[in-house]
Figure 1 (cartoon, rainbow, N blue to C red):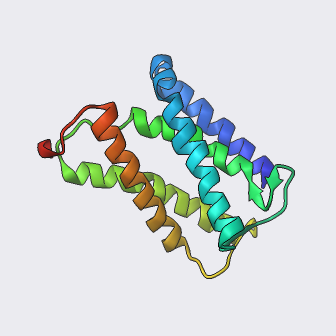
Figure 2 (figure 1 turned 135 degrees about the vertical axis):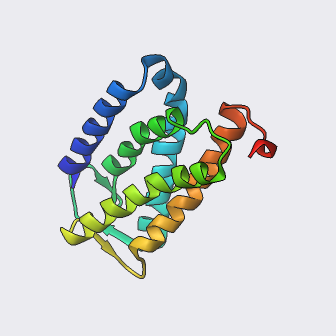
Length: 155
């Protein structure tokens, strides 16, 4: 799991480095750190340690059953999320944008389950996607309101 996490982190970082201008990466790095790494570690702690709903295969970067590489993957993804945030007045565009990364997380979890890297206890891929949609809805609100200085009345 560790090598896969590091590989995905490197791939995501390279893609973001190619697709996002350097000044935007620097601008959104704090967002990527707290929304990606920070929330990722909080989610892993809640789901693995407190609730025991996720159980990952052991690896070298696993602490208290939490694969730290998975939290790192979210840093470049959230930087990209902030950079590509839609400049639209369409509620449908925003809804689609909010659902995009959670669907990606669901696919990742489904593949990890299939290959035995992850085990669920009283949980489902659908639950993962729904929790992630909720989180990304709040992140989208933050970006919309505070990073791009929009008013919700314009939607």
